[in-house]
Image 1 (cartoon, rainbow, N blue to C red):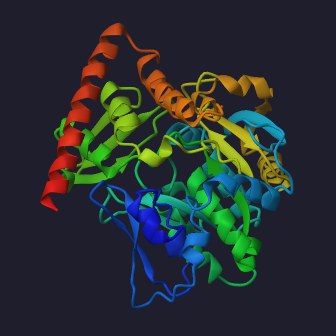
Image 2: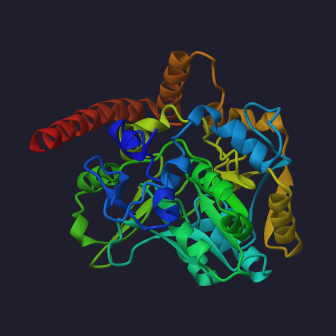
Image 3: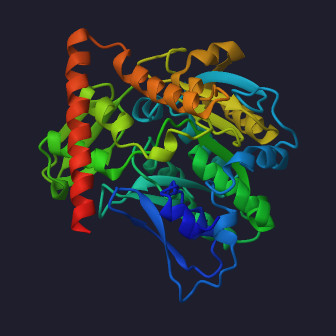
Length: 406
């Protein structure tokens, strides 16, 4: 397998690992016609060392988890659904503002702030939206509490977070870092750590986010169009916040703010599954199995309008980060039993039948289940159904037109 073959088969997930680890800086991430990040290789700089394909999450997918579980945990997990784990928790930040403005409970932001203040880390790889182009994400290394808070909240768009691995590698010898990323990013990071001892020593905390899919920039464009907001007039955008499950919040250049409830048919229907990366349907890790701590929304477990976070600690480093935050009175959590997690819709995606066709159909069904059988009225479900048909037709027409234009 090569990067060219990954691109030709449209297998790329846009994580940015290849760009972040390339010793010659020969790879840059660019947005393609589908609204996803893809690598562009500068043939003049490339030395064909092969490192890029070695760290690609989509290369050798069948054996990735066996090899990486042995690398990270020194064992294959007995639990085929939840993976290697120490304990399970649900809780939230004791900072009410963080809890209210974050995606769910503010736990990721609070753990990072605590780790920074207690000098466990010197910085964290996180993502915020760019000030000069607020619809484009900006991965960066946050080194202050204020910078960590600026990255608070989910980003429901493509993020090439791992381009920042280069900055971690080139940092001062004694510096330590945390990374916050999706499962596919984390696979790339673990593969890069396997090749690069310096990177392995510097990243001391891996926080993985639950993920059902990565969504195209076209999904955000569609929502803006339906809300009659021109892209050039967007001053800022937040995909989550204001309690749980939260709202998309869009501020225009005149200071006016429009909000869209997360479970509104336009938001829920447009983002899932119509603009998802097709590789997400066959992904075999939705809960960051290779992290130190996995964190997600508490769907159907212990939902709270103020916000809660569901956490799975997987390593001693993860447990230590949680205990440090407890001792500092920064978080409030309680343990929950393993079986309580199995009703979570994203965790259900981890239950894999042996038959690949059945597996794919189940995933598609579960995506549909999340939409049609959530707590909506019959009227909203009917409206959502026709809205999704409209989205799919428009998306297919746009894709067809782009192909003809090229």
